[in-house]
Every structure is written in structure tokens, then in C-alpha cells.
Length: 229
Image 1 (cartoon, rainbow, N blue to C red):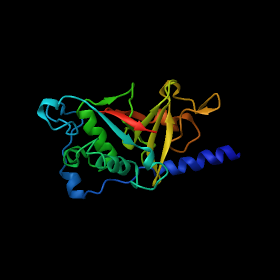
Image 2: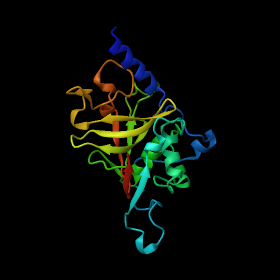
Image 3: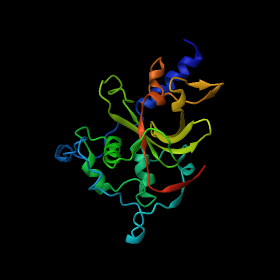
């Protein structure tokens, strides 16, 4: 085993626990939720992070957000915790906690609840990301990586998009906030011309463990964000 293989394995171990914790809700609460992924919620639920003025309620507007201040810091605890922290510090940019409670499934994972909510509102896309969008991944934890069904287990925030299609996203790995890269044009490529374009998100010896092959969709937001990089 060479040094490169050892390093990749070590990185993989970090990702395995990146967002394995469930949200802090009781079993009673989880069992009381009746979210049905096939139900159409798009006509009945309106996100509340637009301006409150009725005359402007359907107008998207720009917002400055500094994601760099979270980088390399141990705040947020896990992936959904980081999103929650940024959400709370930016006037519920991504969700309202009260609304999100309706989208937990029996497993009680917050990243899955976020995905369920965005899917119900027809705001999951698989291309053309923009700055500030959420990015979801499935089956990235030790307990889910061999499942046949897809479960959302990780979430990050898009904070840079390069001309070649490489997306940089901020996320929490093992309690620390880092940036990783993903390029869906080269799903099975770790490095292109010596530059990393797809990070490993779970430990294994093949390309199935690249972020590009665990990608589950972008959570589209209504606001146009100016990311401070």
C-alpha cells in the first residue's frame, strides 16, 4: 500500500462520519411525521425567506453572504448543523424550522428532511447550480453506503463555480468545515491534468465513492447570492 492510498483512505474515514448524526428530535416526534415523498406539496407550501411585503413577495433579490468566515472552523457540528447555522444567521435563507418539521421521515435525518422539502417544492435540480444552492449527496455513511435505496446523508452549500464546470462547496466533515470540489461532466475522474475535480466522500477503492457519484441534486434557492470568497 503506497502513501497515496493511505492518504485517500484517511480522507475517506473523515467523510464517513461527516453527517451521520440524526437531528435532535424525539422518537415520538419522528413517528408522528407523515411525510409522503410522492405527495405534491408544491401548491400548498411557500418558502418564507422572500421579502415580507406582499407587493414584492414573488420577487427574488440579491443578498451578500460570507461563507469564508465558516471555513476551517469547528462550528455547526455536522453537515446539516452547518447549514442550520448559516440559515439562522441569514434570516432563514434556506428554511424555517417550523416548516421543516413536516418533512422528516422515520429515520429523523435533517439532511433528508431538507431534501424532502425542496423536492416537494419542485426545487431540486441536477444541473446549472448557482452560488448559494444546497448540494445533496446520498449513501455517504458507513450504515448507508451498501443500501440499494438512496437516502440523503450529506449536504453542503455551493460557493464557487469554475468555467470548466467544477463546483466548489462548503460542508462539514467530522466536525470541521472544509471546501470540496465536484465536476459532474467528469463523474468518474478524481483528477484532471493533475488538478482535483472530484473529491472522495466515502472510503472505497473505486470511483463510486467520488462526490460526483454520490450526488443527489441541487437545492435551488430563490435569492441571488453574492458569495464572499
